[in-house]
Image (tube, rainbow, N blue to C red; front, side, top):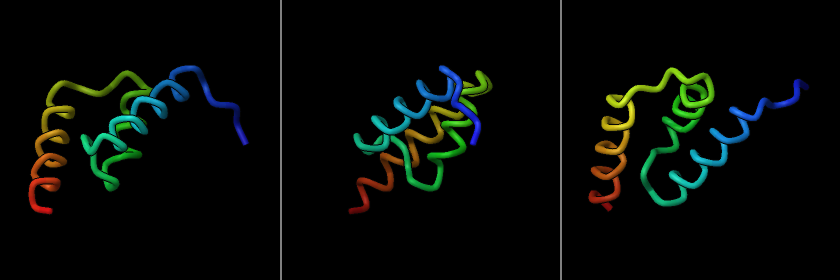
Length: 60
């Protein structure tokens, strides 16, 4: 197993907190984490995921 980089550790922590707050969905969790750790996440990625997560929460 490869040691995690500081970026991966930070991304994992951030994504866990956002997931716990209901701001990202389980299905998007790993993709968001990967993009965040690599520095390739865009504003559009955040906006879309937040909109989808909030819509999912409002359906409950």
